[in-house]
Image 1 (tube, helix red, strand yellow):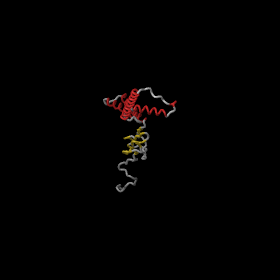
Image 2 (image 1 turned 180 degrees about the vertical axis):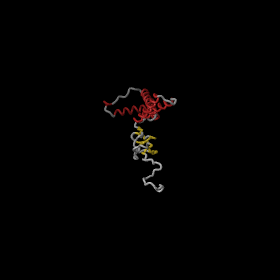
Image 3 (image 1 turned 180 degrees about the horizontal axis):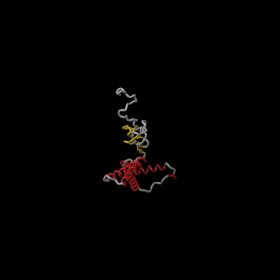
Image 4 (image 1 turned 90 degrees about the horizontal axis):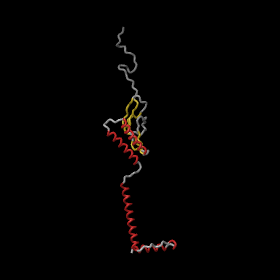
Length: 199
């Protein structure tokens, strides 16, 4: 019954077009038409099932968005450096140290390539207007002006936006103090002659 209705609709649909554009009816008997319909239905069902499986697999796959490659490169480099450090007996050869240094620098470069900038502040002139967290001020003789002596925590930027404020130790010039000689008077005065014997 269903195949007859389909054939009837197909025939009526063809009548809407001029004769030269009409498609002739296929030369299939009812059994063959039903078999073709069943095959097409199975193929459609399999295609739908495959598409659903692919969608599910993509949903379960972790997001490989921007930055994943850089993070992966940095993670592998850090892992290699730590492995080299852990395998040593406490004393690394010069070649091992160079290997560790290369891995750490490569990891940092991988992060920098994706927009992660780590800013060290050692030796920078310090200005109170800088966006830094000062942990302590230390007086250092010989300094001409305030300067960052040590970076405790670096400032970190991700694609130009600061995500961590740096923490620093700042050195400031020691005040000029001339040491007083013991017993010397603070200001010049005339000597006291009250105890001096007179002739």
